Amino acid sequence: MIKKNITNVNDGDITEFISLKQSALDNDYVVVESRNVFKKLFKTDIKIHKLFTTEKNLDFINEHCKDINFPIYTASDELMKKIVGHKIHQGMMAVIDKPSYIKFGEITGNIVVLNGLTSPENVGSIVRSCAAFGAVTIVIDEKTCSPFLRRCIRVSTGNIFYIKVYKSSDLKSDLLALAQNGYSIISTANVKNAISLDKYKFPESSAIIIGSEGHGIEEEILKISNTILKIDINKDVTSLNASIATAIILYKITH
Image (tube, rainbow, N blue to C red):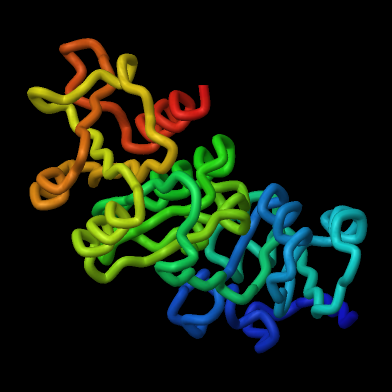
């Protein structure tokens, strides 16, 4: 293990952490942060290329990581803030291999399908709910932000490492193929003729579609859905946040 104390903001060993610009990284890598993320990361076989932290986190790293085979760079809180551009939550970051998308044939279990979600906070929260309620696969379309973004990973509290993600280049075609494989395509929308979630019994294999924050599910996706569900809420409230709606639906599936 290499351990080096950083005293210069321009030190080449910590280039990837300067202002946290993704452009400083190859597309095959991502920066992660926070203790909750690291607790889960250390239990996977994802390669860690380097770790940047304050001295106070060294005991935590030694406790939770049984195989420290990567360089560790340390700095004071003040210097780390200057390097990163703002105060980092819990003062610990790493460059890791970005998890890979799975192939269509690797999709299993109940699925959450994200149609045009652009908020990293929503996507990260949905990943966390999927892990909580046993939905092991997420499908995203081209318009949805990557769940492997730094912010998404942090909001998911590292649970993205336990979820399979398939990225669809043609969501309609993939949903039709899932239907051929026995999946029920279930959209969620507060529209006329939608079935109340409270009255619905989920089939064994369900693909739950969650629409974008501003526009909902695309019309062509609604048209091929077997069922459209709604969550009964106060009529004065137009809709729920996408991640909250997902958590409610996943809870209903498992109870």
